[in-house]
Amino acid sequence: MNWNMIGHQWAVNLLRGHIAQDALRHAYLFTGPKGVGRRTLALRFAQTLNCPTPLKSGSACRTCNTCKRIERMQHPDLFIIQSKEDGHSLKVDQIRSLLP
Image (cartoon, rainbow, N blue to C red; front, side):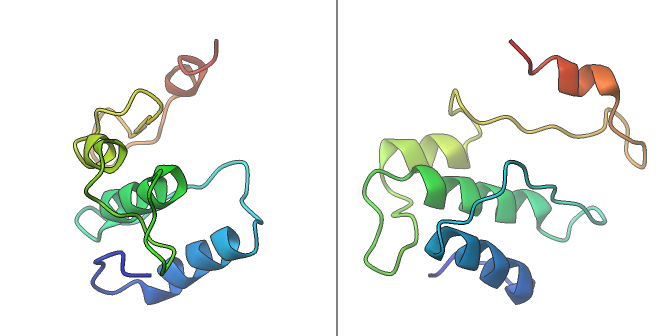
């Protein structure tokens, strides 16, 4: 499964394992310093889970409309939550705003 990630192979393997074993968790937190690839990893994971035409290797095709919308962060079911200011924590209201 090529997620086009540099480094963090352990995280890619963990997520791949969850997908392969049909053992997805109810939530995933992608944390770490700015610029290490958290968002890229999360987007590849979302593409892999949502792609209607996955490759035989089990990775997302990255060419269908769904994959492209996720890549542009424009998919209606994709939510990116991050602190409002660098170095700060998420606020409870940011999470509550996702609830129906």
